[in-house]
View 1 (cartoon, helix red, strand yellow):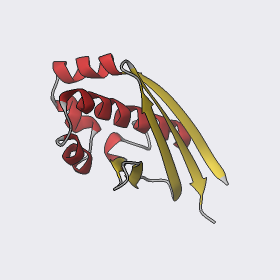
View 2 (cartoon, one colour):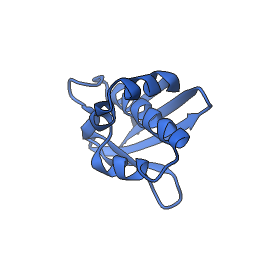
View 3 (tube, one colour):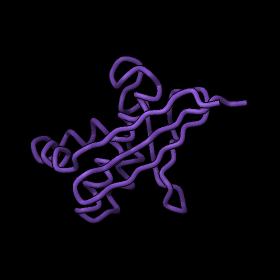
View 4 (tube, one colour):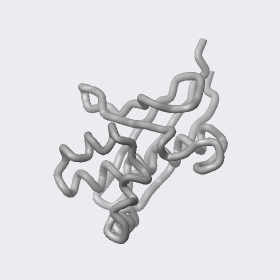
Amino acid sequence: MIAGIGIDVTDIRRVVAAVERNQHFIQRILTEDEIKQLAKLSDKRKYEFISGRFSAKEAYSKAFGSGLGSQVRFHDLCIVNNDEGKPVFTKQPFDGNAFVSISHTDDIVVTQVILENRG
């Protein structure tokens, strides 16, 4: 049974600007495992990756029903690509299944998260 659905749209240029203003932005948003995957990417793909993870974590917080900061923080969530390249949650506070979809153009990224009760 679906427990929550969240969607988010993020302007990639805003994320680029945030990173250029403050390199700490990356460490604030991404976990160590996500940063390891980020290090393997080209410059253009890095910004898509950061934007996608930022957006997916926003979408997760909406599905969770709390928004970011109160019950869910950026580092409470980890999304890495599996061997097939599919993004999957490897860390999340919901006691059930969490599914994520990330898609982008040159300018925007859109993400959706579905939380499903176990059983």
